[in-house]
Length: 257
Ligand code: 6PG
Image 1 (cartoon, rainbow, N blue to C red):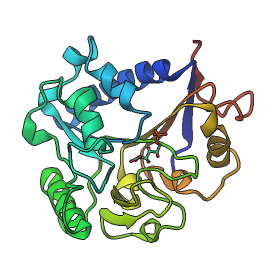
Image 2 (image 1 turned 135 degrees about the horizontal axis):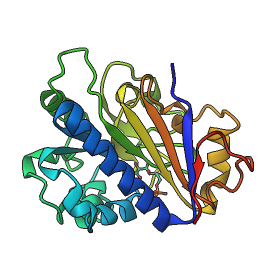
Image 3 (image 1 turned 30 degrees about the vertical axis):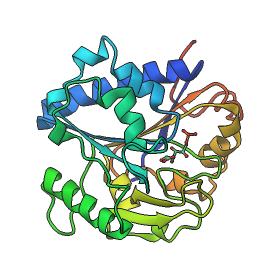
Image 4 (image 1 turned 90 degrees about the horizontal axis):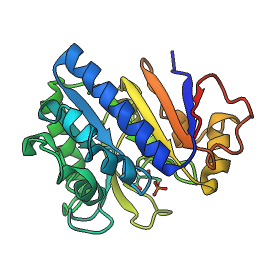
């Protein structure tokens, strides 16, 4: 049964970073007790940067179980790791270069690959190896972080994309004409749906309309389809992004701020 979204509204982007960092620490701690390791897929774009920076600072920097954490990416643009638009580069600068993650435990999507289809298959194979999944099985992340585009896309799953219909492959190469960097690689819905937890991080008034479309109006947008079949769905919003939600948002928490 699809998870009902748990909506947390906080004061501002800095409060999102605090709430998200604490949530990631809690999820990591629980995952390690239950399974001995923590598997997370990071979101790209600008929104999660502050959360990654927060995780690189005390107390999270020394409380996170980095030695048993494995970091993947929800999507990547078709650029190399040094490129200013690379999601890996953003996470590396904000977090990965600052914490003692064993290098083999950060799985980068090779956006620079000559053939994005090959890069997608390679990443799917790497993911399967690390998760120990067999053919036809889907890796179950402990946490998949996602952002939200004003058009309702998430990861690199854009409205109208053939990738929305992917039911077998775990990673797809897509051509998102609407995106500044149209060629992208993305986790697919089978992986998102299999996750133990999906956490959206969204801030800013420019996202208010699409947040309402997804959370209230039931618009069939990619972000509305990104929900675990058997897990937890959280939306952590700032007041500006939540400004068009009903005054008493669906059951969850509104943090004073
Ligand atoms: C990307 C992300 C994308 C992002 C949204 C929101 O590669 O850009 O995967 O889905 O999360 O576009 O981006 P902002 O956080 O920059 O608003």
